[in-house]
Image 1 (spheres, helix red, strand yellow):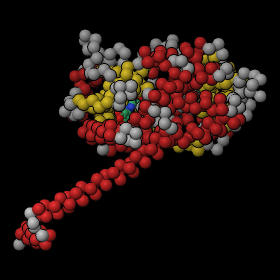
Image 2 (spheres, protein in one colour):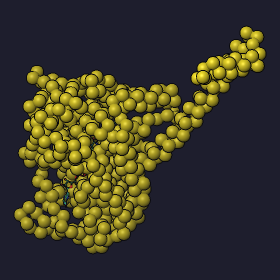
Image 3 (cartoon, helix red, strand yellow):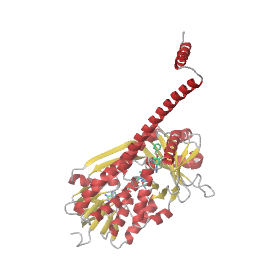
Length: 468
Ligand code: FAD
Ligand code: EGO
C-alpha cells in the first residue's frame, strides 16, 4: 500500500525534534507538513522560554550526521572537553571527560532550531506552517485540525500524525483518549533560573572556555555553558522555596556570597540583581508514558513521549535518537506503519524510560551528597578505574554521553560493573588481611617467637590497656 503513493505525514511541533524529524521523513521520500504553534523563530525578535544553550552529545550528533547537518552544527558549537568544578572557596578543578575526541558541545538552542527548520524546508516535499496550533486529531481517519493566530480553523487529512509537540503535547492528550495510555508525570521541588556571565570588557571569555562549569552545592547547583558571543549562560537549580525566600537584593547577595562567591564578580553584582529580580524560576517535569503509538496513524516522540529533568543533559539527545530509531524501523518494515509503529513503541519505551530514570537518579544523587569535593572524588575514581580497566569499567556518564549504547543497557552494564567492583573491593580486603596475617607469622618465625608467645604478649598488651 505504502509503495504506491508517497506517504503524507503531519509533524506537530516545529521545535528541535519536530524539525529534525521532518528532515528524516523527507529523506525517506514522504510528504511532510510541519505545524508549529509559535511564530517562525527565524523571523522572531525575541524568543521567550527555555534554556538558551544545550549540551549536544554523541546521540544527537549521530542523528544530525544522518541528515547531513553535523558539520554545520559543530561549526556553531563550542566543545567542552571537561567539567570544571568550582569549590565554595573559589577553587577550580578540571576533570576530563575522556580521550581527546570525547567532548560534549555547547550549542545555541535558537540557532539549532533555525538551522533545522531551514534544512527541513530545503526539501521541496516539506512545508512548514507557523502560528498553527493543534486543536484536535483523529487517529482513525488521519484528520488533523489547527487554529491559526487569526482564529482561522485549518484541516488536513494525512497517513500519519507525529506528535513532536513537547512536554505538554496536544497529540499525547489525543492519544490518551484513543488508547489505553499509561501515563506518569512528576514535578520536582527544584526549579531553575538562567543567569549570565557577560564577556570581559576586552571581549574575552571570563572563565575557561572549553568546559562545562559546575558548582555542586548539594541542594543548590549551578552550571555554566559557553556561548559563541563569549558569554556564559548559567543555570541555577534550587527548590522553589529557596527562590521565593530570596526576596530582596540583600538576600540575593547574601546567598551568592555564601554559596557561589566566585561567580559574583564574573556576573557583575548589578547584572545579577537585575536578572534575578526580573526573572521567574521555571519548573521541571518528568513524564513517562507508554505506548507511543495508536493504530497505524498516531505517534509521539521527543519530549512529548519522554520529558525528563535536565540533570543528564540528554533530553534533546534522546529526542534526536528517537528519529534515528524510527528511521531504522521504517526501513525494516518498508514504511508499513501498521507494523513499524508498534515496533517503535516497543523498542523505544524501555530506553526512553531508562534515560528518564537516569536523569531523575542524577537529580537525587547530585542533591543528596554531592558537594564539589565528592564530585571531584567520584569522577576521579571513575576515570582511574577506566584507565586501569578500559574494557570493563566504562563510567556511566561516558556510556550515556559518548556512545549509542541503548539507555537501558547503560543501566544494566552499570549494575554489572558495580557488582564486579564490589567483588574486587572485597577480594582486596581479603588479600590485605591475609597478607598482614602472613607477614606477622613470618616475623614471628624470623625472631624465633613462638605463636604462643605472640598471643601471650597480645593478651598482656590488651590487659595493660584496660582501665582499672
Ligand atoms: P520542544 O523543544 O518543547 O518543542 C516542541 C514544539 O512544539 C515547540 O516549538 C512548541 O511551540 C510546539 N507545540 C507545542 N504544542 C503545540 C501544538 N498544540 N500545536 C503546534 N505546535 C505545538 N537536552 C539536552 O540534550 N541537552 C541539554 O543540555 C539540555 N538542557 C536543558 C536544560 C533545561 C533547563 C531544560 C528545561 C531542558 C534541557 N534539555 C536539554 C532538554 C531539551 O530542551 C528538550 O528535550 C528538547 O527541547 C525537546 O525537544 P522537542 O522538540 O521534543 O520539544
Ligand atoms: C556524582 C557526580 C554523581 C546538567 C556527578 C553524578 C550531568 C551529570 C545539570 C550537569 C555532566 C550535560 C548537567 C556530568 C554526577 C549537562 C552532566 C554529570 C549538571 C547539572 C549536564 C558530569 C548540561 C553526574 N551534561 N551534564 O559528569 O560532568 O555527572 F551539573 Cl546540575
